[in-house]
Each structure stands twice: as structure tokens, then as C-alpha cells.
Image (cartoon, rainbow, N blue to C red):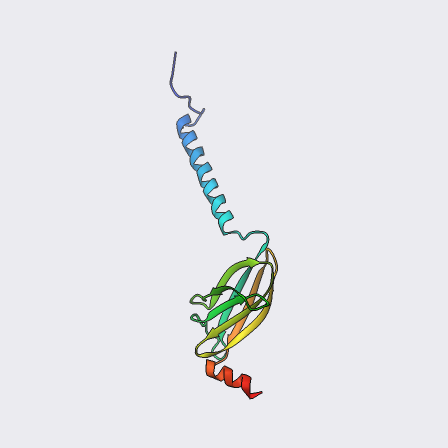
Length: 141
């Protein structure tokens, strides 16, 4: 009896090497599927992309505070833009209010609607000013 491992005709590859390669390929596909599923938003969620810029220079305002609120002004989440002025998050489909503030700028508020499985991009340009200017503006009317 011959107990040698079978070899593929014309190829110098043993069965154990083929099994190893197939096992590695299956593991890589499994990991790739898990990563894809992890980063893919749930079907009932929408992606919010907020981009905050200085209105005069059109440069990113990376240290602004972005508050996502319900229509009744309850805070859902607070975001900080990255170096490019962009902030992202996944939220349930629905209506929200976006409030962007910074100590050196006047605050801006936007009404937005997120749709499931879609990206909603909101550009907010902040105008120079301060919190004190905002209060004076409100009481001047």
C-alpha cells in the first residue's frame, strides 16, 4: 500500500497545500464580509455628513460644535468636525435640526431630513461674530 499524499496532475502541489490555501481564502472572505457589514449602515439609518466652513475664507472650521437635535430641541448627538471641517454619523430616518456653534462665529441652525440608506450632506458657513453678537442681534428686532 502506498500512503503518499496525492498530487495534482502536471502541478507540483500537494493536497495539503491546496487545503491550506483554500482555508486562508475562506478566512479572508469571512473577515472581509464582517468588516463590510460592520461599516455598512443599517437599512433604516441614513448618513449625515455636515461640512462646516468659514463664510469669508471658505476654510474648514474644525473646532466647531455640531449638535443634532430632534424637532423639539432634544439633543440626539454632538459631533466635532475633522481637520477638513467634515463630521459624519448614522441616524434613524426622520427630521432633525442641526445647530453649529463656535465661540468666534455666529451660530447657525438648519432643518434637515434624513432618508434611510441615503447620504444627506449639509454645508454650513459660519459668519464671524461671537455669542454676545448673537444675543444682541436677537434683542435688536
